Length: 320
Ligand code: SF4
Image (cartoon, rainbow, N blue to C red):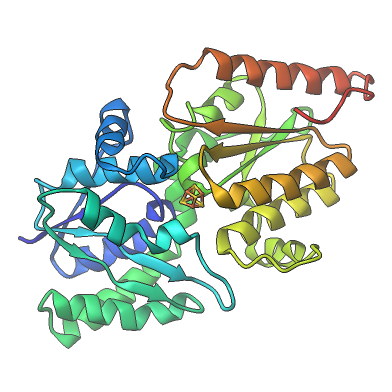
């Protein structure tokens, strides 16, 4: 049976179920790299250029891990996922970066994805299926199966990636925090030092951008002087604005990675909006160091500040 490797990084957290179901239905075995750990990070640091952001380095590590175990590695180039929007330039360049940095690669399956909505995946999937020498009937069935499975992507995130949140008990007396960031930052437990679990263990109700409805975040993302043209940017800013303007959360933590150009803009927008609405905000920028002490202290300080504010001392600064 043909084996296709799926690196556990970047758009894995958005489209894994779509592609995994597609390949599975075509009788292709999907081999997903293990969860990120120190070895994956070290592999990525060794092969990737120094200037890249942390998620790109981690992605290189996942490709290094898979390269000797599979016949193909699936690395799509996600250029556009919505009308008049684009992805980060590093997503656009990921195939070329991998090709130039990782030695002894198997064949890459790297379709260019420039679509306006989910229905447009049809052409891309048909072309991937043909490249794998599958016939039209098989591809058609696999495509339908994949689209149906994709409807369960959010459910899959809750069950497979953050199972503790699937069973969480929401209580009105608990502090509610919105954890913002790109999916590969907030759902990669190694990269973010398990922030979601840590907050939950401290009795916080955690929500993420995936808890905000698409119509709602798109609507609120327009509340800017200038239209945001990054798909992830619209999602992050729109989700934040909807929660802040309606006072649905008590605080916001933004998880970012060192070297992220987009976040330098997005953090500023969310921070300003939080400040104007008197909602506590903190950003945390992760890099290659893995010591947790400073990180834990910052979370504790932020939660203490929120607690004091809730006990009527609301003259505390909402920033950091
Ligand atoms: S959006 Fe930021 S973190 Fe993501 S790939 Fe681009 S630069 Fe890296």
